[in-house]
Length: 595
Ligand code: GLC
Image (tube, rainbow, N blue to C red; front, top):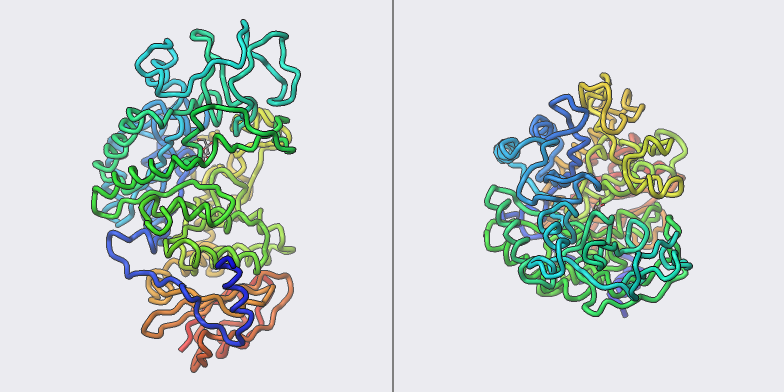
């Protein structure tokens, strides 16, 4: 029987719920394990704060806002790529791993940001785009220059399936006919994640190169030890400067099979009209784990808690566990659990199952939950859509924050999540900036909607920039949804986040307690207990339904509550609750200390 089934079955059988057999107790924080309790905040630098009036955010803007982040309770910031780049994929196409793009500032600005962040005990994490470089990176320019260039093997070059004079140009990959007649077909039928063939023909050398993403993002060949060495040196370069870790971009794409073979076709099409393949030869291959182990060795050689975070979209917890290194725990400290945050349904049973799996099926490693990032519609919309009124939508956003910040997971946030920024997709094709959206319009509108300027206040351009034109327009609701307005409103989402991050830091049970699901057969209300070995206990209950829910919480081991004291709640009626028998308003969250 799988552990999580065991878990549900045994809990259902018991009238009073015992702690999970292998519920994990977090170790007390030491400097080296700071990441186990951390709140990590993703900043998309283009959109956070502009200080030079060019309509685009910059590193000095991040420095300027460090006090805000400190107040919010952030321990570390992950900055999306700020390296020199042609900006085809807004920085995810790097042309120099050891610099700062002029748009964002200078290396001096970066050094100042590192120093100012350190003063505030905020750690800086960078985005390590390791699967591919820009096609303008000197390595690729060399590689493409001739078949016998020493860097040829740094990328993945292959002959086409047949000979011919021009590459094929099918309207959609895997949807014949290939035109013009007699054209050269790409080496395999693989489809790029951003649409079209994953192979691009290079006229000079008459071979194709592989790109999992845009054609301007050629994949590095990680089977070549020189590539690994060059990239590991990049990690050392930034760690020597004081960078505390890395988010590994698209890391399951790192390897492809040696014999590049066609993959079976699925019956699915992407939004661009290509017929998708199974990706069995090009995604999440086992070889990647050796590389991850060696990479972990590089960060561990600093002996002070440098951390590796993975962008790991994976289908299940078994696969996720492999990215930690399973029982050995010698790969990434924090591969992202994308199952919980991108469930996109308010379903207590499903969250209980997924969060329970993260407790019991990753060998006691530390979960990392995330609800928002720069690639997905904002959680305000994905989950808020279930609320019927503005009040309910706010309650839902508070509920997500509660799940994220009162569980045992490390919490990953995205700028603007804390004020309830919304997804604002471009209305017209001519306004789209993300190439993904230009190419996929109108079915795929791209990712501009979740990347709009941070809403600081109600002044022009939301306090983001002094320029009348910003790289992406400011969302009109900034006049009411902004940091300044929410600071002043005790019931705002911003103040909710602040209360929760403070509790997470200062309340021993929420900081380091073990986590036990309770009332596990309730289909509407998700509840758990965080408790310390010396008996400190906090209960958390979240009503995921549109109806009021009456509950009688049953503490682990049949313990009776002597007193109940509300720490924070989005339901005014629960502020003075004195027992564990309560009624939760629709979408309400309740966090209470129990003695
Ligand atoms: C990751 C990034 C995404 C980028 C892609 C290619 O998924 O999050 O923004 O486009 O990798 O680097």
